[in-house]
Image 1 (cartoon, rainbow, N blue to C red):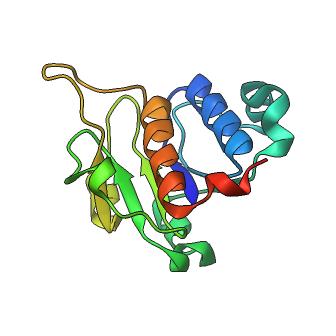
Image 2 (cartoon, helix red, strand yellow; image 1 turned 135 degrees about the vertical axis):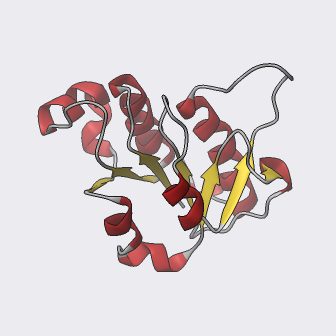
Length: 154
């Protein structure tokens, strides 16, 4: 199981994703360009003391991300407010990568085209969206429950 952020805009969200990735033992892919300067120093600052515990891979583009060998092991599952299926009704697999779009603009057409599936987190009508890392956490925990990954922690 992997988590991917597509062109993140907010450094604090990247920091939260790094911490989530480290604590749950899930690899994190960052698909650039980012909406902020992404240097080793800024990543270390965003990750606080969790940076060395997170498995992070940076990709120059979506196409570079799609070419990595790990992409052959599962589906790219887009987490989006208009996802086709409620995340609780979706059957996750251990090789899946959950990908989340930009905080400011959502998911691009190329990201929708690249995904093999899309899921949504149900919300109260009239509200726009959850924070991107909050949505990632909600969906990731269900994916880990379904695939038995929780049992492998501690």
